[in-house]
Each structure stands twice: as structure tokens, then as C-alpha cells.
Length: 72
View 1 (cartoon, rainbow, N blue to C red):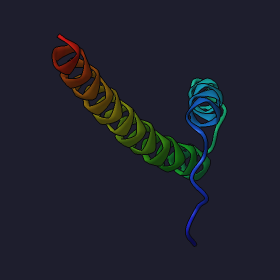
View 2 (cartoon, rainbow, N blue to C red):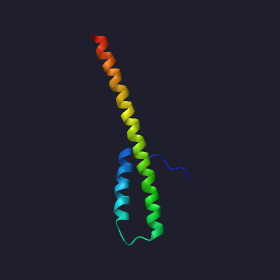
View 3 (cartoon, rainbow, N blue to C red):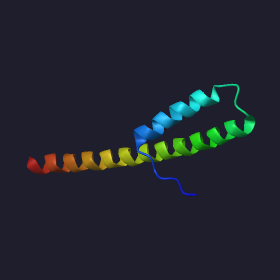
View 4 (cartoon, rainbow, N blue to C red):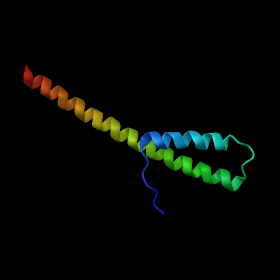
């Protein structure tokens, strides 16, 4: 089943919840593994989004620098 891509902040909030759940030592191993897998997927999603944001910012800055140079 394909999961819907969460907004960055929603994914980070869910990661915080998962960390708290995993710190609960009363979890069954299978349940802990389920949360771990979900957290890993969210972590990868957040990392990908951050890289996309960084690339977009770099493109915007290069465009701004080019605009500034052409104004001179």
C-alpha cells in the first residue's frame, strides 16, 4: 500500500511520537518493529524533502545573484 506523502512538519511530529513509543519498553517486539519501519520511512521522506528544499533555495539564490549582476 502506497502511503500519502506527509507535509514535512507532520512527518517530524509523527517521528517524535514514534520515538516516544519506541522508548516505551513495554512494546512487543513486533509492534516496536512496525514503529521502527514507519519511522525509518518518515526519516527518509524528511531527508528527501530537505534536499529538495535546499536545491530550490540554491536555484533561487543563483537566480537572485544573476539578477543582481545584470542590474549593475
